[in-house]
Amino acid sequence: MDLKNMTNNEKMDLAENLDTPLDLLRDLAKDASWGVKEALAENPSTPLDILREMATDVSYQVRACVATNPNTPVDILLEWTKDPNYWIRRGVAENPKSSSNILVRVFEYEKSLKKPSVEVIWKLYKNPKLPLFAKRVLETLFGDWL
Image (cartoon, rainbow, N blue to C red; front, side, top):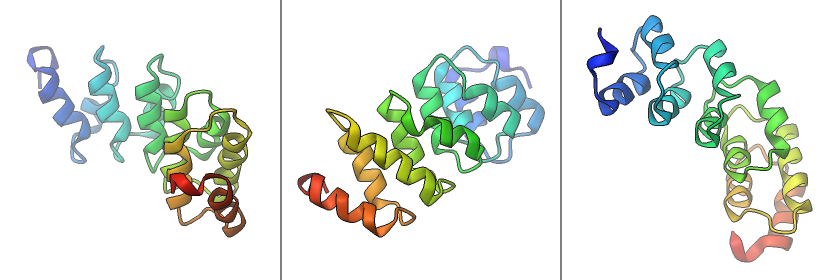
């Protein structure tokens, strides 16, 4: 398959397809388009080495998509619990792989901020792994956002 002659939309479709062969996923990881990389970062079939590579991408949008991928390694999620970009913390808060420990770390960081993110608070609150004590604190501090 010749990726050079494909449109970005066609490459994005390939990047998000669960059945795209591994060699094509690896080629798509080198694409210059952040849209293609975002689609690839969200694909649960994307190999761990590519997710790790995309976790250092200059685009916060790509990193935020990696944060939501259920196969993102725990060490990356843990590192991102205090990321200055709220989109990345939001992704960690909604990631099904995030443990209660990871969620509490995001919670602690978020409540320490002068301007916590409504979206991060919302995603934390909706995550069933967030401990009950943290939910009660969120209700007390941010009840009007929930």
